[in-house]
Length: 459
Ligand SMILES: Cc1ncc(COP(=O)(O)O)c(C=O)c1O
Image (cartoon, rainbow, N blue to C red; front, side, top):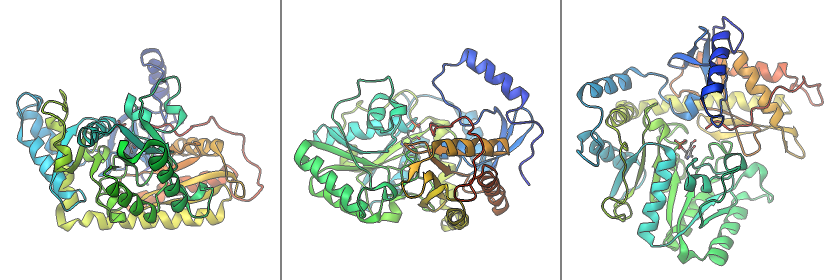
């Protein structure tokens, strides 16, 4: 057993730190779990009160190889003793180039590629748009309902959910939104056909295909609730973009580095996007992001047009190279193990759908899976309060989980992909006990009084 609770959660030291946080830190940053970490290793977080919790959030799908993986830590330590920073824009270094070479090699697409490094996911998305606009000399960007692309102004303008945008208008111009093929909530039986028809209508008749620089898509929505796009839609979208000279950008920031059981989600769909954006799992906790894609598109910005003081920091490059080593060693053996984790999660979640009426949908690819909670299976009315209560039950019983979804009614599973079967089972048992103890076990069963709502804003 990994979970060891010595105090109530949050414990006294975490509560005291939360008071200090309230006084010193701006209100804006949100916490899914009100504990403060002291150390973390593998799938376990130890808090400042000495409690050990299982981590099924991975710092928002970042620590895919677990916390503090020895090889990544060693690579960072080695680099730290050599130099910390020169800025790639002032005195370049080999690690940046080596990482770009590796990313060009491992990302989908049998064509000449180049890469560019930045610090955060939002920065990668913003740079992908700069690059696509410079290449196409067009302005419009098409994004999807339920998308999350970050919190900086353009990335936020491309993000769907009102909670991320409230109070920040005006947004960037030339961003157009179209329905995502969200099968569970599609107004038509064929979500792919519906979403594709809407996209064609928008692009061909309202914006003009010759004005569209890029379509940006998450193949599996992350913050939007782990909704996987149907393959038929994705393939048709890729063909449509090609036909109209539109740059197809796949945002693999949350799906990348094994999260779906493949190195990249694109591999499940058999598509080769023009550009991909990467971050999160790339650095295993060190802040780094990348845009990788067709060399002729990547070379469109003028010299000095993209870059930054810290982008592709040497420590983060060293971490990312160690991450790629791990995914490539033994011919990608780690991915077979990750897929087995996905199957184990999938089997357990499928059983919950049978057993708990509140579980309206279970879905996802590989280990990137979730449950969507509803008040009524017929109407599919989202049950945000149930998701909040379940997330709270989980951390109070030693499991860190993440909410998600535009309606705040999704619990996503994002454990370290390297966790052991018994760790996985122990965490899933907490979730299952929560579903039982909160009264979700039978249709019409009395619910316990609602707990404070965690609304799925986790980034
Ligand atoms: C798909 C996707 N794109 C972009 C981002 C933004 O990344 P960051 O928070 O590092 O700016 C996120 C973060 O959750 C994401 O999931």
